Length: 478
Image (cartoon, rainbow, N blue to C red; front, side):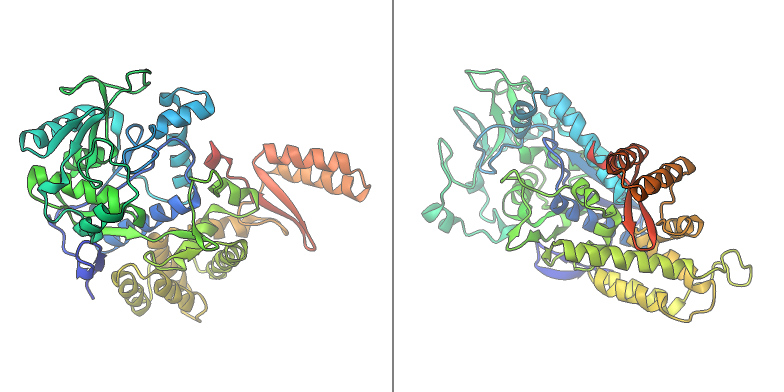
C-alpha cells in the first residue's frame, strides 16, 4: 500500500508522490512566541512529527521548515488590535525581543520533552523582513494591493477563487459578517504591511517603500516557505484554525506572485478539546506541558494520548484519559523490558515482517495512529520469538517516538519502588531521610526533604510498595 494523505485543498485522500524524488519539502506553521504553547498547540506539532517520521519511514528525505512568528501577528485575525508580541511585552514588562527569545526557548524545550524532531530549518519573521518587503512589492507591481491609512492591503476581489481552501462564501461574509471594515474594501482583504501608529513607537518596526511599519502575519509564511522550499513544494501543515484565514491568505499571495497554491498537499490537525470547547489562549486559562508534569505525568504520556486519536479527529482531554495513557505507556515499556534477549546473535536485528507491514499500512492510510498502536500492542502481547519482539518494537518506536527502549533500560536498573528514570544515590539518600522523618512524624522535615529532592530533579510519591520517583521536566517550563 502506498502512502495516502488527506489534502484539505482537494477534500480527499490522495496518494503522496514527492515533487522531487530527492527530497520532500515540508513547511509547518510555528508558534507566535508571546507566551507558552498550550497542549492543544502541541498536539498539532505532534501530528506533524508523526507525518515527518512516516515520510522518513517510507524512505523519503525530508527538508522540514518551521517559522517563528515574532512580529506581525495581531490579536485579531481580522487585522485589528495590537501585535501579540507588543501585548506580551506589556504583560511581562520585558522587551518584545526578550519575550521572543524566552518563549522560543520554552517552545523548543517542549518539543524536546515530547521527543518531537526539530525542523531542518528554523526561520524567524524578524530575520526575513527584506524577503517580505520584496514579496509585497511584487504584489503591488501586479496590481493586487491598495493603501489605507493604516497599511497596505491585499485585494481579494482580484481572485475569483479566493478562499477555496476553506470553501468560503464571500457573498455571505459581505452580507452578514461581524468584521469591522475600517478602510478595507472587503472583509476578506488582509494586511500585507501595517504602518506604525502615529501616537506611539513600536519596539519592532522597519523602513519600507510604503513607510515605517511591520509586516502582516500571513506574508511571513509565504515569503519564508518560498525562500527555503520554493514556490511549489510538497506539504504545508498547521492546525485546522488556520484554514479559513491564515492558510487561505498564504495561498492567495503565492497565487498572485507565482500562480501556484504554494503546496501540493495542505494538511491540518484537529483541535484538542476540554469539555465542549477547544483549547485556547484567548481566555488566559490554558494547560501547558508543565501543568501535566506538575500533576505527576510524563510528557511522553501526552504523546501517547495523542496517538490514540486520528490527527483529523477532535481529541477530548481529561485527567482520566491522561492517566490511562501513562499506564499504557508504562505497560508497553514493561513488555519491551521483558524480552531479555538483547544482543543474542541468533535473533539480533530480526523483525516480525508481517507486523511491520501491518504497521506501515496503518500509517500509510493517512497516519492512522490508533490502528498502528493496535499493531504495536499485538506484538507486545505476543509470544514472538525472543529478540524479534524487541527489534520489531524498536522499528515501531522509530516512528511513534515514545522512547520505550531507553525507558525500559532505565527501569531494569532501577531499585524496587523506582520508575523508569532511576534517581541517583544522593536522591535515594534524601528519600531515606525523608522516610525516617515521616516515620517519626516530623512532617516539617519531611516536606523540606521533598523540596531538596525536587531541586535535584525528581518528584517523590508515597505508595504501598514504597517510594515512587518521577523525573521532573522543568526545562519544559523555561
